Each structure stands twice: as C-alpha cells, then as structure tokens.
Length: 137
Image (tube, rainbow, N blue to C red; front, side, top):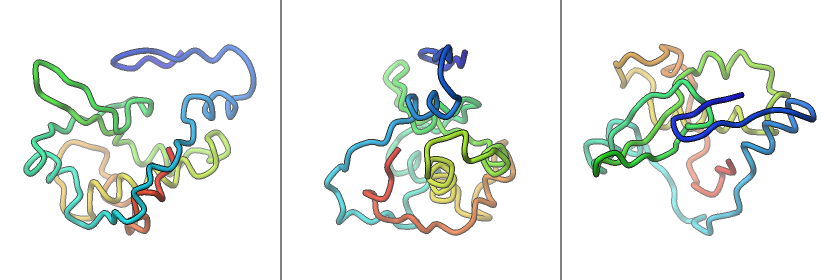
C-alpha cells in the first residue's frame, strides 16, 4: 500500500508497471501549447509571487498536488530526486521519471535553492521541457 496525505493506493494484482501506469495516467492535452514556462516559474516564486506555500513530500503520489489547509494553498513537491535518478525507469510509465525530474529542474534551478530537500534536487540537469503541453503526467 502507498499512503498519501489524502488517500492510499493498494497494489493487489498485475505487474508493478501496470500499477504505476494506473496511478500515474497520461493526462489529455490542455490546449495551452503557446504557454512557455521560463526561469521565473520556480518554487521560490510560487510562494513569493503566487502566494502558494511549498511543502516537500516523501510520497511521489502527492507530487505537484495542491492542498488547501485553513485557507492557505500548499503545493506538494516530491523532492527525492536521487530516488528517481536511481530507480529502474521500467517500473513507471514511459517518460514519467524524466518528466518528474524536469519538473524538479524547473522548480529548483541549479544553485538557487537552499532548503532541507534532497541535495540531488539541485542536480536534475538543465530544463529542456519549457512548453506546458510537453508535460503529460
């Protein structure tokens, strides 16, 4: 079982890849192909400009999830980049791990974040996915 802040998922049949594909489905296009995300779209500015609180989560199911607690909106960010970098990609849907690492590269530009997250979050590489429609999960 995988527990999150809000729910849990139970793997009781099929392969692990079938399970992860079911819980991390490909999303439909959002029709925003003209929107390009620049370097100002990062975790610090989600808070400073957007007024969103950023909280780290140990649960991949909660990554980029939004939680409203007592009128304050929090964005949950899975910050264990080293786990993703060292996990067998065949356990997840095709492209999922790379896309998740790209969200971390965007949210935590190299050498610009100093919190208690996994230090490898700053080493996710260069951001290559800048168009919002490139994100499928």
